[in-house]
Length: 254
Image 1 (cartoon, rainbow, N blue to C red):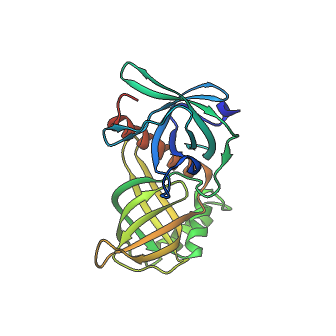
Image 2: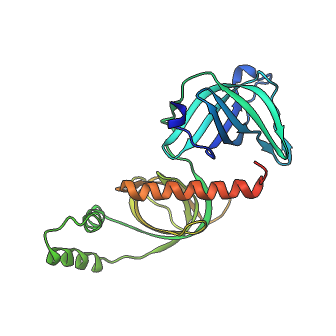
Image 3: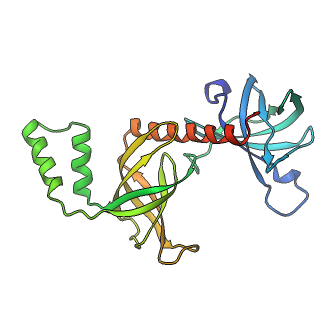
C-alpha cells in the first residue's frame, strides 16, 4: 500500500515522461513535495517552482515521480488529474498509474552541505578495533583498555577538508591531497542545523580527482563502511529535516 511507503512531506522529483516531450533534450526535473495521500492512487502534490515561476503541466500530462523517503527512493508513473489553487497554496491532484518500485541506483538522497571536516588515512585494524569498542565486543575491561591503548599509539595526522554533500551512504568532499581509490579513511563530521549530529565514520574512497573549479584542490567521493543501522538512520533523518527546513524557507506556502 502506498500509505505504508510514503509520508506527507516527502520530497518528490518530478519530470515529464520522455514520450510527452516535444524536444530531443532530456526532460527537466523539478522538485516538489507530497502534501497529502488522498487514497491509494491519488495524491495531493505541490506544484513545483522554477525560480519564481510555477511549473504548470496541462491536465492529462504523464509524469514520472521519484519519492525520496526514509525507506529509500521509489519511482512510479502518474498523470496530472487536476491543477488546483486553495488560498495561497497551488497543487496538483496526481493519479498513480503504476506500482511504486524501489530505485536501486539511488538508495539515499544527498544533501548539499558546505562545512569543514577532518579525516585521516585509516587501516582495517583501526576500523575493526573501533567497531568492537562501539559494539562492546570485548571480553572484559582489560581487553577494552588494551584496544584503546592500541588506538592511542597510532600515528595519526588529521587533514582538513570541505564537505560538499552527504547522504546515508556516503559523501563528497574536497581537500588538498589526492587519495588512492579504495583507500580507507576515517572522517569526523559535525553536522549542525535542526539537529546537531557528531559523526565519526570510516569510508572507502570511490574516486579522487583534481577539482575543475579550484587549483591545488582535489574532489573525493567516498562510501561509508561499517556503519550501523542506528547511525545511518540518524544521518538520513538529519538530511530530511534539513531538506524540509530549506524547502519551507524557499516556499513557505507549500
